[in-house]
Amino acid sequence: MEPTINDGDWLMARTDVKSVERGALVIMRYPKDETKVYCRRVVAVGGDKVVMKYYSNVKLTTVFTPDNPQGTVFPTGVTPVGNPYGEYDTTVDMGSYYVVGDNTAPGGSYDSDEWGLLPQDNIAGVVIERISPNPRKF
Image (tube, rainbow, N blue to C red; front, side, top):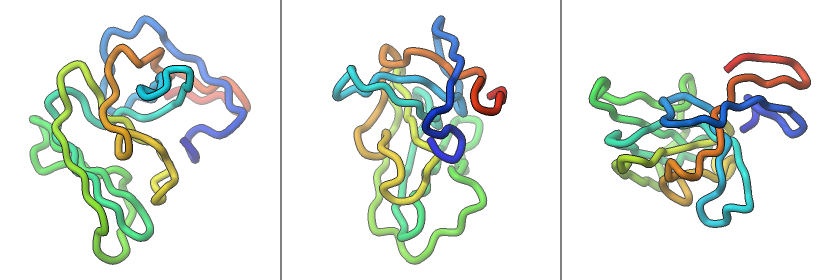
């Protein structure tokens, strides 16, 4: 999750999670091995369409929602270099989420781009604050 969260950071999370909004940082159990726990950002919820493209310098994820049919690109402010060499698109199932890491370099984050949708039941909590080393609200 660098640069947002770094190794050694301590996080405070709400665990009484009923649903999660786009943009939230979540603590999640990896669906393919639930003994592994990750922190990722929710970029799409049930009903959203997601298109992800790999470029030589970045992977761009575009989320199309009912409120924003032209799409929102994540991350913002990055200009891709060259032509895309890989593309993935899906519509998020109800009760699932599309999560990505904030490290957007190709290979920089292992997330829904590689292993698919995150079921609601795999969310252990929603991050509300980093408490160490430098406190910050999310």
